[in-house]
Amino acid sequence: MDFSLFNRPPLQPPFATSFLHRQIAISKTSGRISSMKDFLAKAVDAAKSAGEIIRSGFYETKRVEHKGLVDLVTETDKKCEELIFDFLKQQYPDHKFIGEETTAACGATELTDEPTWIVDPLDGTTNFVHGLVSFVCRVIVDKFPNIHALFTAIRGKGAFLNGKPIKTSSQTELVKSLLATEVGTNREKSTVDASTDRINRLLFKVRSLRIGGSCALDLCGIACGRIDMFYEHGFGGPWDVAAGTVIVHEAGGLVFDLSGKDFDITSHRVAASNPLLKDAFVEALQYSE
Image (cartoon, rainbow, N blue to C red; front, top):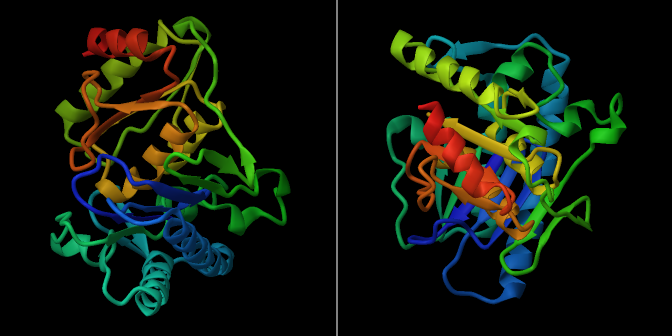
């Protein structure tokens, strides 16, 4: 689950929290750290409450709709987004809201100068539908307590996992690096061929590759050093990366375009790594095109 509170024009928000895939980020170009801490606390409260809906829904028959050929949405996604919006609107009635399953579905994804929450209610819906555990920890905390994870960050104040500081890896060699990516939901042959060709070329340059089903979790993996490099071409929208980008930055990592240029949150291209690998990673990405 990803939430963000954004102000244009920052490329990443100054605060973020991710309860595994329930992810929240908040950005405000002006404001005191005390305000950011309040935003963070409210975001965590919303994420935990929505997590109970996901936890219950995991054990029930899932009502699934298709947004595309393989892009799914469930009743749980919609219930979570509604709960989050209702809660945050009570706290911040003057803020604006963009949700993957509601506002954004109608095409309203413009980021303005107004404080705007961006919400992805459940990142990793396909994993959720198929009963895989890698989507949100509240669903699986009783059975898998070792992956109960709450990622948080405030710009300039560091990144944390369950309250403890985290940092990106110190790996310097591509061949010893773990790479993560996602293949997206576009099933046009040309897109699939380009994606698989890139993966095939990159596999000869890295130790191994993982496809976990969540852009949010991949970025958090970079932040805590479990993954060394990550890229995705064709993710859904800002809600997939808003919180993860600030968590990575505050953990000492870099988020950038696949070309190596500055990351644009309104694009559908993202790459991330520790600072020591960026140049070699960008070179490998360009080679793989």
